[in-house]
Structure formats: C-alpha cells, structure tokens
Length: 95
Length: 480
Image 1 (spheres, chains in turn orange, blue):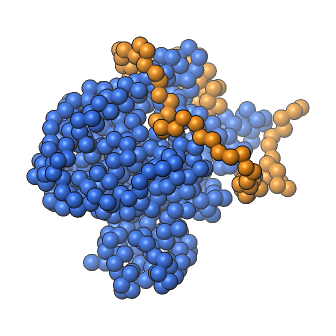
Image 2 (image 1 turned 45 degrees about the horizontal axis):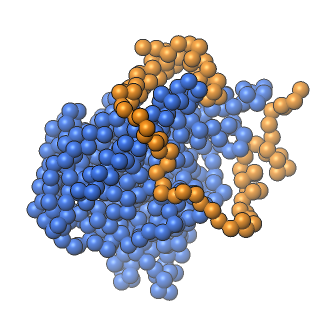
Image 3 (image 1 turned 120 degrees about the vertical axis):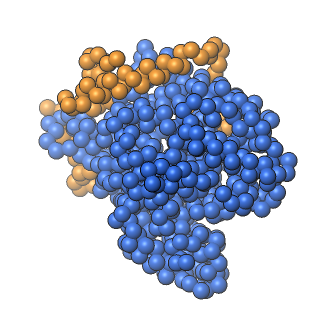
C-alpha cells in the first residue's frame, strides 16, 4: 500500500516539510504501513469511553497571579539563529 | 578496582572518608572516557572544564559538611536535557550547535546535590527510536558487544554506565527509552511515575509520555539518584505537588506478602525464548525471596502499541513545530521567503525518522482522521489504564520482559521502522499508564560469540517506586 501523492503533498505542507524526490516512495510506503497498523484500533469497542489526553491527576493548576521575571527574555532572544541589535532577523515578509 | 568501575555507594564512602577527592574522581572518569569512548561513542560532548568546576564545588561541600549521597559523583546527561552554556543537541543537525541559556530542573537538582557532570550522551534524534542509530551525529555501540546496538533512545546514557565511563547517567523514557537500553547494556534503569521528575528543560518529544529517570550500576544507586532529581516544580504544569521521595525506604526489607503478577501476554508470540526463560528465572528468584508469583492476564496490551504510536506522533508533530529556523537552532541558507525558510530548514535539519513521525502525527490529527485515529487512541489509552488499575487491585506489581529480544546487530533493523517499532511492545504500556517501571539485568543470551545482556521489568501502580526498588534490590541480592 502506498499513500497517494496528493495526500503526501498535503501532509508535507501541514508539516512545513519538503519530501525529497528520492524519499517519496519509501516514505509513502512506510506511512501507509503505519496507518494500516493503526487501523487495528478500529476493532476496539470504545463506545462511551472517555478519551485520555493526559495522565497527571491534576484538574487544573492555579497559582497566585504574581508578577515574576523569568530573567531569560533577552538571553533567549539572542540565542536565535540570526539576530541583529537584539532582534531576530527574518527574510522579508511584506513586499 | 579503579574508581570508574565503582558504584555510587562505594564512591560516596571513599569521598566521605576523605580517601579520594571529587577532583580526583572527575579526573579518573575523564581519563576513562578518553581511553574507551573512541570505541563506544557514548558521549556527544565531554565537558571537562565544567566537570572540574563542579568537582571543586563538591570538594568544598565535602569539606564543610554539606555533602549528600551524590556529592562528587561523576555522571552523564542525555543530550535532550538542557545544560546552560553546554551544547544540547538532541543528536540532531537542527540543534547541533545550540547552547541553552538555562539549566533544566534536573540539571539544577543534580548541581544542588553536588554531582559532577562529565558530558552529554548520544541518543536517537529527538528521542525517536530504539537503537540510537537515528542519531544524526554519531554511532553508539553496545559495550557488552560492540557490533550490537546499545538500544535507545537513551543508548548513550546506558552505554556510558555499562562502559564505566560514569557512575550514573540520566535518560528520558517516552516509550521505553530508559528501560530498553538499560536491558540491552546490562544496567539498571528506572522510568518513574509521570509527574514526579520535572520536564522543565527536557526538549519535548511527546509531552504526555516523556519522563526523566536514572540509569545506574545498582538498584540502591538508582533510588538515590531518583531521590535527588524528583521534586515539585511549578515551571512544569504536570509536575505533581506532593509525593513521598524516600525511594530507598524499603530496600533490604523482605518480600513476604508481596504479590507479583506475570501477565501472560508478555510471554507469548514474538518473545525470544531465551529472553522469556531468563525473565521466568527472575520470577523464580523473587519467589525464593518471599514474593508470591502468579500468572495473570492483561489483554489490553494488544492495542497499546498502535495507540502509543498514534499519540506520540501526534504530540511530536505539535512539539516539533517550534523548530522553524528562526528562534533557535539550524537555519537553512538561501530561502527567499518565510514559508520556504520553514520548509527548507525543517527538511534539512530533521533526519528521516523525525520527519516521518511529524508527517504521521499531522495525518492522525487532521480533519477527517482525528476521530478514527487520535481520539480512538486516546480511548484505547483509557481502557488500558482501567485494565492496569484492575490488575493492581490484585497485585503489588507486574513482572515482564523489557524487550522481546536482546540487542540486535547495528544496521539490522535500521531500514525497517515498523520492525523497530514492534520492539517497543513490552515498554509502551507503562508510558500510556504514566506508571513507574524498573529494568533490572537478569542474565545474558549467547549469540554469534557475543553475550548479550537481558533485563526484566517490574511495573507498579503510580508512586510505587519504593516497592519496585525493594523487589529489584531483593532480586539483585540473590544474584543471577
């Protein structure tokens, strides 16, 4: 089983990835294989079963709304791949 | 015996008795790395200068009486855990030269304890894989048999402990990534209860599964390391507020009255007969030590693997969206606009397996497929949690193989991701349930002239770490 080219294209766009030509066949085959494997789940009776998104026994975590400085803002900014004068540089977005 | 071969307990005694200094231990460990790591490739980065700095602090703590169980003990850190100023690569081209500007909570905790970090260990890229062969930076070999994989994704951490290149190592376990390499390399590995070790500063792969834990030479050492790293941390919204961290409390106590279940599904089709026999022997040894062993059934494990892969790919596709070539890490050259920059950076920066999981994750999350895959897997997760709960009303813990086979040869499965995934069958149910489980060495299997280590795992309900260590230590005491 192979994934059709249009679906693979859509997935690549959603993932912001390109699919190198020499990988197309192997990748679509292996994705299709995994999807077939996932279909084992369809045999499972899950009528009325709540989905589990998270395992932690925490309902909600609330804390006092006190300001604090993470101290990292500037360091984080400057750890960007390319920055100038403390600002991150990008390709031109608006023509 | 040289220092690098000793366990934490022995080293700690020498330090306390002033028979050795932390600086001397660091020097010995760094020498061991220089001598053998060329062969095994466990470390991606050796942080010599930083190690000596931390050793100096440890020696001060020893001198002024503030030292604890880990003060002065040399260790290795998996390279997906942030270390301020020391590159944290996730074994990816994407982060090959990335220097974190902060320490992970685990890094802080170990610094506070006076432990001495020697360097960062190799892994599957972004922790996606089971053999460490998906590292974009380096190949790691199994110290027990260098033609074989060390397991993964924390393969570098397990190899570093097994090769006596550190006294302990830190790994992370999303679907078995601490326990399986521990089993393959013949060391002890614990995946703790979800929420007991902060994920702050752990580069996220699948957040509802990821959990940090220790790899050590002995069970008692493992408990000591977990005591040092587990705590409540408000910077991780899933960090649990209150729990007992006295994990060593029950070690040495006898096992009478302890009920251990052997789920028959873990011993069925696909499980190597030699592995199954060694694990059965371990069960007998525990019975000899006073535990009551009984066969039980956990049919829900049959859909654990597809459920796990749906959910972890979905979470990965979301978590790895942050690598856009703008904020940190690799940036592709020559992209004319923003969209091309994203796509070119991500295509060049991520390895094949990472891209495959992102694509799969986006598939199962996309409109039209969400209910059939993602929601269905979440419901399967609920059913598995219920099944575990039911079993834990009858048993204190479960005993099972860690992996269906011992380590395999380098290159043997790397071209077949499906076959690689099937090897995770015994470990992923624990992560779906957020449960603690410990991998303990229980012998070796002879294959092509190599003696390949095998481990068994003890799986308990949430917060049962102290009991798991009790049983594991009792087993260790009987000897294999």
